[in-house]
Image 1 (cartoon, rainbow, N blue to C red):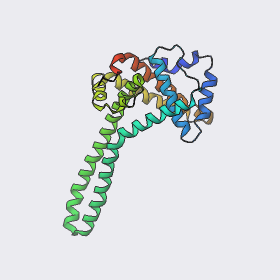
Image 2: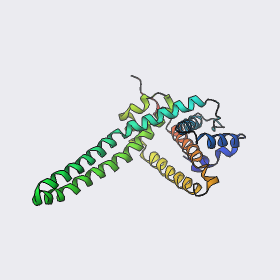
Image 3: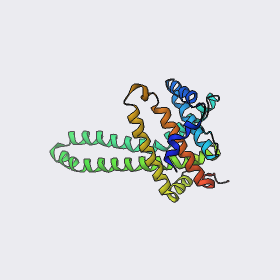
Length: 226
């Protein structure tokens, strides 16, 4: 992956002002705008993987972009369901701990005061670790989704984890580049005018990076036949 390409490719597009300008306006449409931007980023990734010399898509297929964005959000929520379960257990344990300790006298309060923070701390660590791993495996599913455009690319958890494990360095660099992009977006958000570009730029850069990785992994992104 070449980060400089992801930062500069749109300047080679003769319609860059129109395409980015529309992205800036569309982002303000409640919910729909965010879904459309997600689908727009997906089209960028798909174009990069296909070797399209002008990967920045126009906004002609607006409904298609919304649909793709919705599928990506749905997949992300699917991957975060176990995290939600861990958080619910943690909250329930915290309230249960307070109730038992409050009604069990000083000895019970002391015992639970010792054990409670340990259990809650372990659950917190588990939640953090899962969130990181789930994010990485989701990206592997995204790579496979670029190839197939089938939701089953995300639900093949074992295949996605295998792809992530076998290409750990590449996915590590991808996340590092995402972090750098987030830092750049944070700087853009410091002023009103540049802040309008923040979300479109993030989608454009990250989409290009995902397309580069999909192209590098090649056939590894295909969904196995069943």
